[in-house]
Image 1 (cartoon, rainbow over the protein chains, first blue to last red):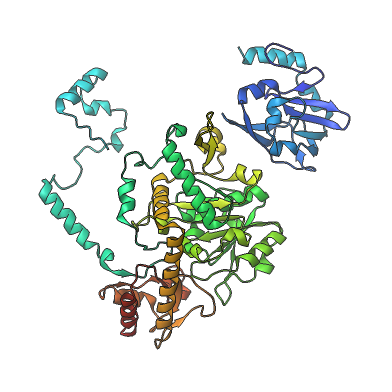
Image 2 (image 1 turned 180 degrees about the vertical axis):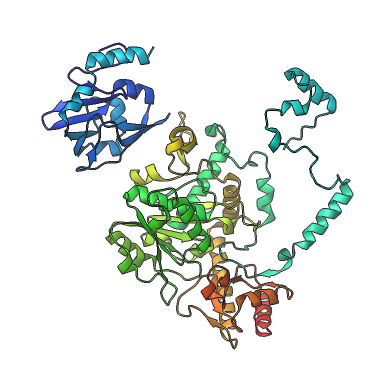
Length: 134
Length: 451
């Protein structure tokens, strides 16, 4: 825990409040507890990509809609989509319930390892949250 | 409606309160060049009796209201009981909008729920929304929805879909993907039904859009179109301008349509210079369809005491949530027109609705047979079934001339198809509703023969 919002150790983060978790078969991507708190009840996760599509770091791969607003989902890294979480189509509430687990969105086979260095460490992201959530 | 007059003293008091010396000073923020620095160029005020006389004179210039009408082409002259207007005027109902705190107005929500139920039963599809602006915009929204659902770019729109609807689809698509270029016309065959379906429906088509019945009155084979569309992963969208046809025809949903839209005007809105009308929109069930349906949905539920209650199950999110990412331009519904439809349909009842449909068909067939027997007149699509509208080739080769010649004789003869297709200048589109008497139909056929 870092402050009010859960920040997972071992994960990397973006300034846009996505997380990237290095796994054996690629980089798993989702949104952080802070993002979930800002959105409120999530009604629709709309992934614009399918398995095999290429994504670029910083570019949108879909949108997430809540009772309050709609936000873009930005990819933390560039690469190929190898898996998508099809469960979210019928159960978007999984993102509210377990944003670092069952609420994962896509798995990316990263093409540029250097991009990982651009991402925030848990402590750096925790510091960012202190600034944005004052 | 409240009328709030204000006296010169009150205006002065208001200006004083906000620290302005004059009304002009109040509006000084508006650039000078767009301000009108003179009085409006309108006639001076009239006293009430003079005004009434003036309005009376104006209304007598509206000759269309006195003519016997065979004009349809998307707007239909069905009789509507004055009781509908009387109920609409009730202050609880008399608004064009859904309230911003909708659950407070249970009566409004219940009436919308009833409307949705009527639309759902008409189309034979389980989900219907709280209404669209009109049939044309409903058709365009159906195309956009199909594109989102299939993530495909191209759409096939039958040439039998109302030309104004096709224009609206064009307009809606302009800013999306490859725009109008994504639309391909599906030509009509000899029988007035979409031909070449087998060849044109490909695996990149999002939707096939057909009229049911189509603009020329022909009853299309929805089942066949649905089978071909589905074989290629496309959705079938049906467009019904005259929903009274569905009193007798099988509902499009039962024939395989994925989205069915239509114009609600014939069901309960008088002919009023082209609008406001009310669009009907229904679709298949399924989370993906529910997530993509435009507009709002009212649902029935139970409150904490177990009593029946209504809620806005799906609100239009375009204004306050999706904003610049809106997928639809509908943020409201045409509430008053939808209510008018609901009241009228409830008054007709199921039997009354079917009876009205039977009369439309019988009277239309009667007139069709009469006209077919006249020398120089022939049916454009003689072998294809129609409901209450059909196209005829006129004697002399000019439908426009027939329309002009019959007006002084007391008839609105129909729609000159040359207005939308120069190749059809000899064709007249004739619509018949239950309003027409046998005497009207006989007199009209005689007038056509006398030309």
